[in-house]
Image (tube, rainbow over all chains, first blue to last red; front, top):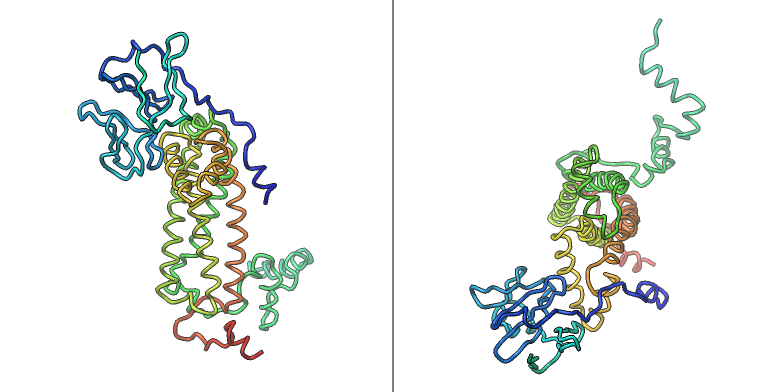
Length: 126
Length: 259
């Protein structure tokens, strides 16, 4: 049993790094919500500052999308809806979209650690 | 005087080679006929005596046999598809498209595999409904019903694992959703998902794991249970006959009471 479990668990994963560079802050206009499909995160720029949201739906893992005409984040699979701050407003999602740890690199790039969820709303001001 | 065709057949059946392959051969006595069934590796799964009414179409609609037939088609077409398919992330989708547009008869084989898979799921359900509403699951056949449920699960798992292999958007999101359902298992959910995918999301490891499950582990498991399923039909007294079924003499409890 233990052997089978250990054998089936890969010791090295060739998965992308959880830390991603989202580029310069100037690229994101005020009051914008930008989905990065490869990184699967939203970069949101509000008057209070920048923050990053995990774009993977907390229901069953589909990639959500920003609907500018409705001003909401929506999941195409089972119809969950979220505000741009990640709070769930509708649908089967059990949890809000988590906020991710974001900081400015020494070069002034927005950095996001996709593996670190933060519980309190912390804005990055540039 | 020319020999008739049946004369040639009789000569062939009397030849040393035929006798060597088929051993006893058929005959007129009940014993000889029984031996012809029992001593053949393919036929010995079946019962030696059968009510003629029960092998007609109306008794079973041949749903179990048809299910086995689709399984046979799936094995043959699946092996042929394996000759052109690489279960690796950069190539799987391209190979699928090649099978459709480049390989001779590839489109036919792929569609045959796909439609047979759909038909098999349908036939398994139809077979189970038929068995259920006829009451053929009752003693002494209740264990064979359980094996049937296991075979249903294997059929569904085969469909699910095969779903990922084209490596397109449909496959990717279906397995993403499906593996997240698995992670809803209490306590061990995340671990199960990790072992299933061989990583934290659907990637090359997941593709390879699903390929091995789909092409080796699940078909062999299915074959194992199919063999038991067929053998149990014989051991449980043949196919279920509604009116002329003899009284049940030896359910597990009554045997225990007699002992």
